Image 1: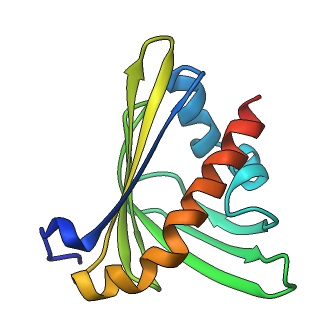
Image 2 (image 1 turned 60 degrees about the vertical axis):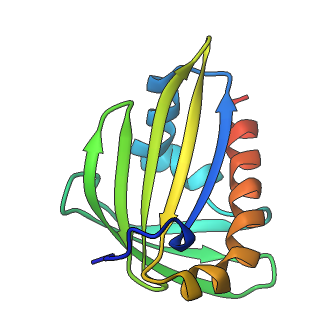
Length: 144
């Protein structure tokens, strides 16, 4: 469980997408769509489990462009269709809160990664900030 409420423990990434909240939510909630765009540039995915409900597990392997495999395990905490997805990532441990809000004819998406301490957060910023942007780029291209 994440205990820190310190903003220094958070990485926040945002973008506006030119699609409805329902369309953007579908890109997350449908594993066939999600597997096509999830991860930084050059990554592919193999999903072993995708139980999209509170308490459900998402277990997958990200295959990097360097040939390395990265095992991932998350547990969904809260899901509000077309509004919010919250999950706990097991290792490295953080809580991700994805929010979707109307932005004109599009959708403003916010990712808030909350780490246990500011020190842990600082260690991951050089990786997460550019990776989040690459992930958003892939999502935008997928949504067309």
